Image 1 (cartoon, helix red, strand yellow):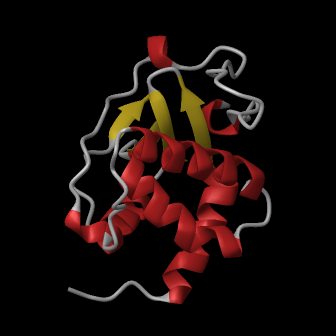
Image 2: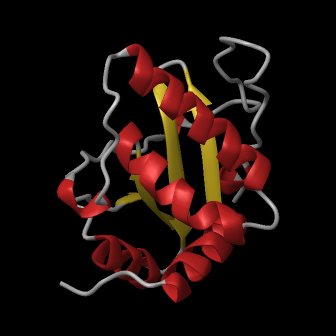
Length: 150
């Protein structure tokens, strides 16, 4: 196994800034990366050793990361490099940390490769309408859904 280096984290941060969507729905938080060419998403998936399936909707491929301990680990690595969506990433990060603590999971995965998240297919009925979010406190704010624009 190759060790994921700082260059990859910087690359992933830039990709998430441009083609990513940090979100908090009533069913939970997540990070979706969207791209017309699946090769880039396959590269990211391979580097992170995530056991996820890419989903296809319309002309766009999606990589969805929904598992909270995985999100915490990834966001902690990419946050220092983010330029545009760092506020959105911080909202998701804090939400995940709070929910993990509420569930009594004080141990957050220290190696993101230990976990194998599940994939959730994207259908047109699952697309957010107007960026509606779950409202559980003032710290959660409306996160843009720029990744859903075609």
